[in-house]
Image 1 (cartoon, helix red, strand yellow):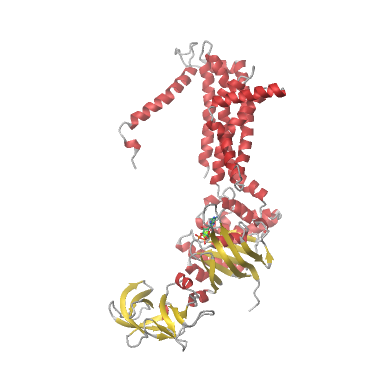
Image 2 (image 1 turned 90 degrees about the vertical axis):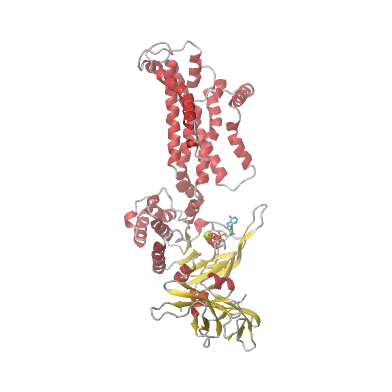
Length: 360
Length: 264
Ligand SMILES: Nc1ncnc2c1ncn2[C@@H]1O[C@H](COP(=O)(O)OP(=O)(O)OP(=O)(O)O)[C@@H](O)[C@H]1O
Ligand SMILES: [Mg+2]
C-alpha cells in the first residue's frame, strides 16, 4: 500500500454562529479530520449536524471561528473561494439558468482565462464523461433533474480541481436514478482520481460508495473509518444506532474480560481502543449476527414477541428474560422457513467475535 | 376557505366597480374618434382630431419635452436604484441601512403635493443663493428623484429572490467578485431592471403635480398641456391627446408586467 497524502486537513475547526439576542450555535465543534488524496470520503450525519458548514469552510464561502484548514499542507484561511482549487457540486445544483449546458460546464475554465480551443475541447470531454453530448446547447432549465445533476458534476470537474465537494448531490433524485448516479459517481471518481468529499444523510449510500466515512453528530465527528469499521465496529452508541439496526444490551465486565449480560448469558465481546473494561458497559450486536435456535442451544433465552416479514429477510423480535428486546434478522433463503411462531420459547446464538463493547 | 366569487351579489358588485372605473376612460377614448367639433356631441367616426393633435406645434413641443424628461429620469433613476438595491442586498448589513431604505422609499409615502412644494422651494433657493437654474434640467432632476423608489422596488425584489448559491457557485468556479457580478448577477437582474425602468418611465411620463410646480415657461409637458387645454373651450383634440397618453402608459405598464411575469 502506497503512502497516503493528505489532501484536506481540518485541525480543531469550530464554527460558531452567534446571532444577536440568540444563543450561539456551534455548527462545528473542534473538528479534526484528515482526508487523503484520491479518496472517496463521506460525511454522514443527520440533518443539522454541520455537514454543509464543513463543506462551506473548505470551499471558502465561510470561515472558521477557530482552527485551521489545510490543503495539501497549506493553510487556506486567507484564500477567497475563487482562488481555491476546490470545486463544489451544490445541493440544489446552482446551475446558471441563463447559460446553456456547455456554457455552464466551460464557466470555470473561462474564469481561469484558458484559451477558447482548450475550453471547447475540455467541455466536449466533460459532456462525454457525463453522457450529455446531445444536450450541450440546451438551457439548463430545460433538462431533467438527473441531467442537471450531471451538468453540475461536469461543471465542477471541468477545471480539474484537486478536491471535489459534493453536498447531498443525489438527494433530489428518485430511487432508480439515484442508484444509477451512485454507480456513475464512483466511476467518475475512479477515472478522474480526484479526491471526493461527499455529504449524505443516507447511511446506505455512505456504506456502498465510500472509501472512508466520518460519522457526524451535533457538530462533532464521532468516528472515522472504512464502511466495515463503521458498520461492524461502531465505537459509540450514536454511530451504532445511526447506521443499520442494532441491539443494545447492558452488561457488566467480569475480571475474566467476558461480559455478563443483564439478560443472563456471559459472552465474549470485543472492545475498541479506549473503551473502559470494567463495570457497566453497553454491548451491541447486529441483528444479522444472531441466530434463532432451540431454547437449549442459545446463550440468550426469550420468547418470540413479533415477526416482521421483509421479503428478503424476516425480523424476529424476541423478548429476553430480563425484559429487554432483541431483534434477530434471518435471511429468507428460499429453503425451509425458520419455523418459529409468535409466543415460542427460543434461544439466541451470537456469532463469534461480533459482539462489541461501546465507548459510551 | 370561502370562495368570494360564490358570494351572492359578487358579480353585480364587480360589474359596478368595473363600470365606475372604466366607463369614463372608455367615453374619453370613444370621443377621441368623434368627427364633430364639440366635445360631447357625437357626429361620426374619424381620425381627424388625431391629425390635428399631431400637427399642432404646441402638442409636438410638449411631447418632445415629456419624452426628453422621461428618458433622462428613467435612465438616471434606474441606474441609481440598481446601485442602491445591490448595496442593500449584496453587502453585509451596514449601520443606517434601514434608514437609507426609508429615505429611498420616502417619495412613495409623502403626499405628492408636499414633494412638489418642497422641490419648488429647493429650486427657488438654488436660483436665489447660487444663481443656478438648469431650465428643463430642473424638471429632470425632480423626476429622477421621485422615480427612484418605483425603479428600486422591482430590482430589489429580483435581487432578494435570486439564489445566492449562484453567486457562490461562480466564486467556486474561479470568478472574481466583479466577474461574478458581470456574468451572473447582472444578467439575471436584467428583467428586474427592465421592469423598474418601465415603471419609472410611466411615473415620470404622466406626472402632473410636481411638474406643474417646477416647470418654467416653455417647459410644458403633455399632462400640463392637457390641463391647459381643459381651461379653454374644449375640442375632441384633447380626447385624442389623452388617448395617446393613455396608450403610451398602458404600453409601458404592460411591458413592465410581462417582464415581471416572465421571471422565474
Ligand atoms: N448562517 C447560519 N446562521 C446560524 N446558524 C446556522 C447557519 N448555518 C447553519 N447554521 C446552523 O448550524 C447547524 C449545522 O448546519 P448545516 O447546514 O451544516 O447542517 P447539515 O448537516 O448540512 O444539515 P442538512 O443535512 O439538513 O443539510 C444547524 O444547526 C444550523 O441551524
Ligand atoms: Mg446541508
